[in-house]
Image 1 (cartoon, helix red, strand yellow):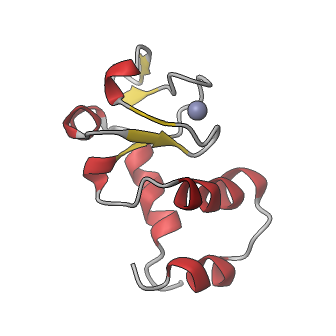
Image 2: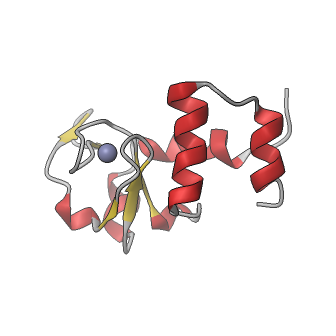
Image 3: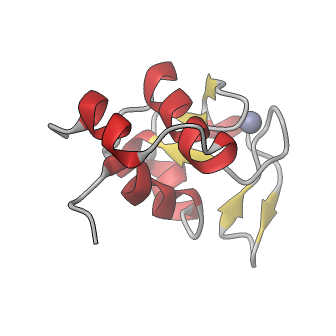
Length: 99
Ligand SMILES: [Zn+2]
C-alpha cells in the first residue's frame, strides 16, 4: 500500500459528511469543480447523510471543515484521479505530497 495520499483520503469526506458539510464555510465539488456555500445544497442521499452537488447533482462534494484544501487545483486533481483516472498516484504526490 502507498503512503498517505490526500487525494485518496479526501474522498472519504465526500460521503456520510452532512455534519461536516454544514460546519463548513464553503464546499467544493470535484466533478464540476464549483466552489460554493454548503447552504446551497438541497439534495441529500444515503439517509440524508451524503450531499449531492448543488451545481451538477453528483455526490462528490467536500466541505472546508474536512481540512482538505477546497481549491480548484485540489478538486481538479481529485477529479483526474477519481473520474478521469488519467494520473498515477505518484503524480498526485508531486503536487500534494506535503499535505
Ligand atoms: Zn458538482
